[in-house]
Length: 330
Image (cartoon, rainbow, N blue to C red):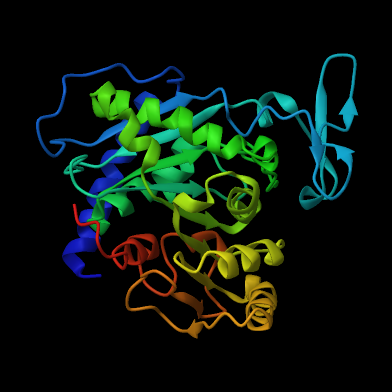
């Protein structure tokens, strides 16, 4: 990415950081605005409360057959988090935030081919502080030039926990996207566009612990036919079989995984599973992410995992990745 583009990302990130301070407590559907007559003339951002949100979740953990909320006192219930050394995270406030970050970049044009980028965040994340601010996800999408909108659901709040919550349940991710279509249309400013957003292709991006909800989204989410591609950023750490099954069964989608030493073993296993299924793949940075491309990119093992969304094999790797998706110029 050019120095000019990187400067643009930084400027957009600074603007986003300013915006989110005022929006951090928004939890209602975005108010309708005047109908756009062309490409958006300004960014639009909101934090919207969803009925089909990942949390609260009071069901069973898949493959373990134990309740997610496994600790109860007179006043509260909680979850024992293995990643946090067996610490207990209480349902409030860790598993009760129903909000998602919704972002439409300046220049987005509903009349042109477009995609929805769904970002599954990692551990110890608060949407406004980390996804919008520290990781600059909206700014990187804007800088990519992709005609796309962003959805970023909140999972466990500021916790060492990768749990997918209700997205473990078959069909819930589809319900989430159906609900999001209405909110996207409202934020866009034209309720009549809901049907367009409801059919829009999906690009799923999972960073670190976001692999867990992403793995279930592509297998039991109920929207496999809409998934144009999957991007893993220093992930996965489990469920390689689910990703391999998705890739093998959906050869019209692309798959790109870039990783440090942290996820090297898991990616090697995923490559073995794909080889067993006779799915060809390449090693190295893909020139384009077109249908059927499957690419793995081992990066410098000394790269910091916690900075991988903004500083990896290139600066602003998410923007770099999104620019390689052809057919959707803004």
